[in-house]
Image 1 (tube, rainbow over the protein chains, first blue to last red):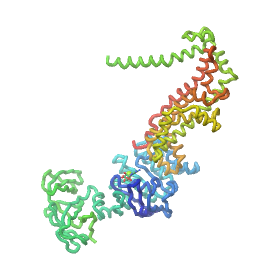
Image 2: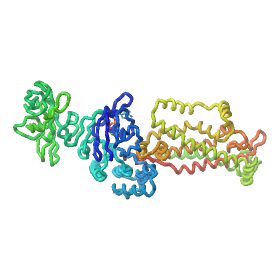
Image 3: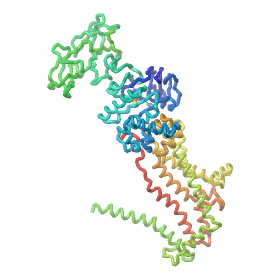
Image 4: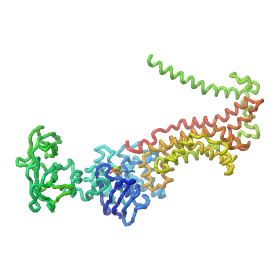
Length: 360
Length: 275
Ligand SMILES: Nc1ncnc2c1ncn2[C@@H]1O[C@H](COP(=O)(O)OP(=O)(O)O)[C@@H](O)[C@H]1O
Ligand SMILES: [Mg+2]
């Protein structure tokens, strides 16, 4: 049984602060995904948990042990690397068994556990091969096998799928999800791909520039992003963010408009907002539908017909691009004028500091 | 016509290198077969009589079987020096590539200095005497290691930089202590460079003439190269025996070459990372 507790965790490289005080609590058995743009410090944070990076400040608790200075091998963790990091001179069998050998596990026990891991990952037929004789997907499987045999309390994954091609990525993603179900251990997974995050996670941690932006379940993050960064990062295609001005504040109703947007009333937390404030209106591409009485008018700039849905890029008079995803197949002409509407309950307001004004 | 150029050039190159390398060797072999009188002429003629066996026996038994002692000494010297060189050079290269610290520039300077500055013999002897290592075989081992270390380090360093760091980290997570990481993961991967190091350094040390001459005086301590003195003197040199001796001590380096030539290991790290 091991959850994780990160208390004001910090990391400096020289004078540069890379992780700026992360507080996070992860329950036993949870699948947590760290997601964020490249360079935001996801790997650094994961490597601090693994013990590969020194912790500059704060506390790291694994289970009920303070692990700041505990050696990696004693933390009860296993890690899967982006580029697999298999030992090239050893067979798959020895790669998987290396940790057990170092721990002086008796030979019979070692053999049993290696074969057990190979069975779980369906790679029994690969055991005598060298890593150079394996495909990318098989290599990643061996890397996961190497983690499994250690029977860790916590699995750490650093972008394990990013070197695989698209089809294999989906397949391996499902395998990892299944592995989590079967083993029931805590898993911490790093990715810059929000689709991976949405599909795998019990809990997503969105990071930007070393700061946690929001923690929550995938649907929470999708429906109630805490700020502009999360709103723009989670969801594909991205949420449309339209600059607008506050026309009036009436209780928890805020009326906004702009050149691109006819007057719209939206329920929001309105404290501190007043007439004339600039504000950002966020609306998901899927929330927009053609509607003769709609409040957004633009010209079709680009159409992608996928069969089951149609992605339309719309040019608004103010120049802001607007992404719309329409159900089914729509034959739209480029340059055609289009009127779109949305349910105000599905729109979000963000104030000048970028914080979401969710209705209470 | 355009194709003839490279072919002619290639043949010319082969012929020239054959001349440069094989003719002296042929001369050595021919002379080793001759008797003393014919060998003294030092010419390129067919032996009048075949005396290889008697020459061999005489060379080996001279001065109370000195050549045998010399072979034992040289083997000990070569094997221990090269072993130490490989281990230490790989370790230094590993630390230099992996653990950046403010000492690195100093270490790199010392490595370059070791390559460039010729060793001073007399102070070294003085130091060795002070340490009680002068005239001792293990003292000479240390000398060879010290003199050749910079070159070996340079060979290793560039290669270690190409080994992905994640490999060390994976090993650390697997529970490897620093020495495990080095001996079980890194050193095996360095095999291509290690082969180069073994060939270059063992041939160099086995053939070393000057350092044993300076630092290892005494008949009991002779190394193979010094046995060449047995048959030369100012007025009286037995060329047949000298060349038989040369022939004998050329064999071990030749074997090293032939053996490791087959061990060209390319792409050992292929498959370590994405592919
Ligand atoms: N050894 C290092 N020295 C200095 N800066 C580093 C070092 N490693 C990472 N960084 C910086 O820390 C930040 C976070 O890196 P990383 O955790 O690798 O990001 P990512 O989220 O892409 O995994 C980056 O801006 C990177 O430049
Ligand atoms: Mg990363």
